[in-house]
Image 1 (tube, rainbow, N blue to C red):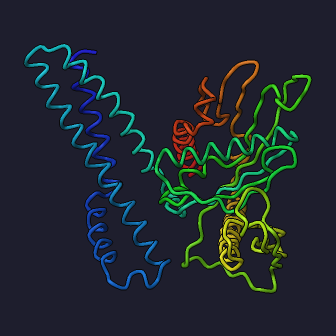
Image 2: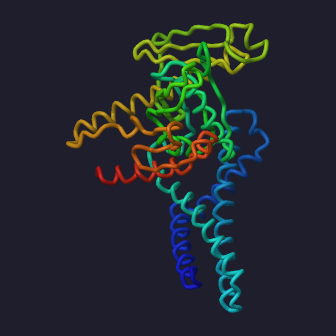
Image 3: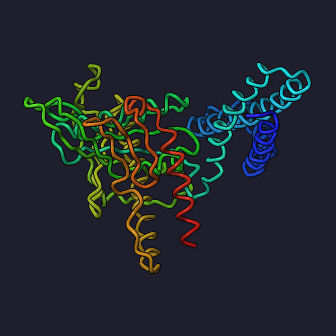
Length: 371
């Protein structure tokens, strides 16, 4: 690329970043930071641990967003200065350095631009993710465990705190199901495009004849319930069972009736939690998960009514959404967006941003087309 091409790219990136700054409202974020810093400094903040956690979590997120925007703006300005110097001195090495930096900036700004597409009612919430093995026997259970690791590694890459609430282990290997939380703002809006059926094709390590096996796992993503949500669960509608926790864990976890299973009788929804030593803590966590699932169910019923009104009766975008092929070739492909890569190893290690971003853009286009 020539210096003129780099100048055009700089202009384009500047326009995109200005749009991102406007949509995310950088001035408002700075006001929010000042307000949250005052609240975080209050002497009695931790008298209410839940409120304190909410304030400090929000402050951390806002500080991160401001830092991210300011660093991108600074890097873009520096690239402009370096380009001017390279042009003035006819310095090809500096020009090449500008090109490298612009490529990196394009990726970072495009990633941030995706955030501006998250404008749904619950998109700003934290996320509860449930994985379930499907058809495919032990391979499906193993696949579910691979997906759990993939999402936890993705969250770790981004510095998002996670908490695994429940794991139900299969008899031979892998997981029957698992539920975990991603405790970061916009985790729900970001991960909601991962909901649906995932398919794995590979030579089964559990088949002594080395045959190819196709297995399936389901991913469910719901927003964390907040106090402002009107989700009432009368005591008469639930059954609470306690039992010994299973799987890996310390003595206190495995030898006391600390694990809790809550069944919502009208819907048949069952949630379990076994990650705490205290039965009361596990019950409170399980009730939070149940309310989140009931909120998602109510939202799905409302959406179904809206879909029935529309003449376009297209299927849910979450169904049969991604294939992971390890044999006879290596490829991961999203069946909705056509996004694909030939490096499934990196994907299973948490490198899924390209799929998430493509999914968010695809969903936004669908929403606009449906209006």
